[in-house]
Length: 102
Image 1: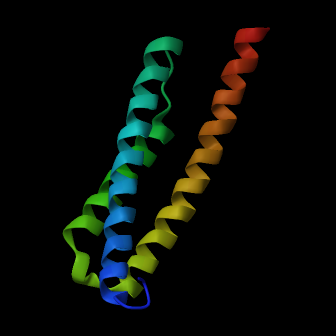
Image 2 (image 1 turned 180 degrees about the vertical axis):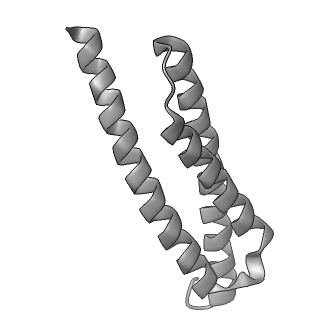
């Protein structure tokens, strides 16, 4: 089907990525709130990643005609920033788990 209707396939993929980014942002914000309530500590990196995910998802969904190159740049920037911040958050959460087990 992708070979018969490449435009529709690209648009569907574009919408899928936008919806995924929005849902990932909501999940990351929910996790940040849960960590804040249960461990009485701030995971500000996770809040930043959640907001970044929501922003990228909303941009992708609101600008479907922006094109593949724009989408590629948006996804690449999002992936790099998201990955770096999540590594930092993981290190912080690992430190919290060590502190709780000692």
